[in-house]
Length: 523
Figure 1: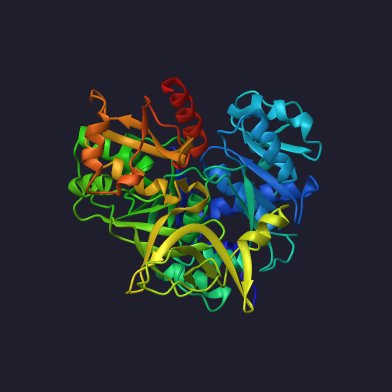
Figure 2: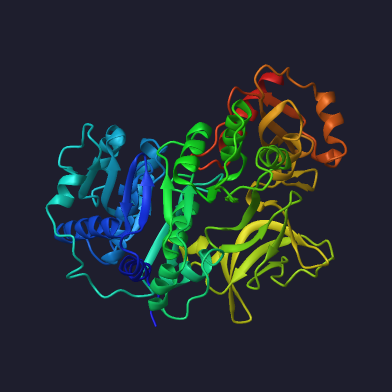
């Protein structure tokens, strides 16, 4: 029995062809329309010599074309590659080359960047441009490509559960790396938090037809794995996905109200805060919205409280997992505690399960339906995907303890852990504490060199407009009941706006550079 994402999507199309599948910037496509356009694009790729196993980059902002491109490539067993649209020349050159791209679909607003990189990636031979702007010579216009081919499914290859999806993740500190997933593992592992168990691929269609249509607002960019997974979860239920090209709080409210969105997927405070600020400026109800789910970054208590004050009936949940492990669990309170699924545990340094209630710190790991490894990086694959007593585990890099009741208490990502005088300090914990200060709207914490302690804790702060800069003593007094003294920032630096990735994740490399420069000025 083969579970393949393209097959499953086609079962949904056949079951609910007239249902709305995608809304974006005033455009709506039904499942039948989305399928037809994806078929046209799939035939175009085939005619261009792109087929099973070939990698094609998706260098686009949010829009129907992004989803059409993914579906089209899956139909012909090719592999879509997500491209961070904020990357500049050297970063793009690395990603295009590392991912072995042979094709690229790009928004015309990125034409200059694509043109600058193209001579350095000779494998990249086929380009499509979305939009009306200037294009790279030799590129074909997206809509022209669709119009030149039929919209049926004839001639597509037989698909497999072993077909690949690759999700590139830049993480928070390192270079981009491609996480390889089999379709079947992605379905039951990464999407397991939102998809009810399937016995056969064919049952997904009748199940969707029997269910009331659900409307989900995917706020993050589709180049972020969270948004793509949330989209396919919605598709597998026969629901509608709403997208915005550029996220703002006011824009989010408009989409929720106009499309009667029931669920909203975000990435942490960086996306929740603009929504809260828009509601602060103009309080209003959002009666259709029942759930906000955050993945990729945890919501802090002040932001949760502000959301709940405006929307008291709203259910707010943090989804826990990683690109390598898939969905591992969920939490609905503010203390970083998660109820994990039965394939997730915390392993100590000897790769044995941490004893609940012991206080021992270990690394969150998951078995079962997990990723295959990293594309073109066997060394990192060997370090992250380990076998213990015949069981294969994916190590997430997230450090945690296990409470006596079995719930997992998240501490932070080990790769950004600060070691100060032998004490381990997790930036996320300090950031959450800092953001409870009434003057602070955002914070990113990093370790910078210290001659005595090896590293010291430092923080980049963004303040509420018109708020005076807190003194060090004020910060220490505020933080004293929240975190141990050795975790207190020894240096703070205020900026007008903190730099984050387009998905809202902290940019720790940027923060470290900013704080190191600030430290040199204070030396």
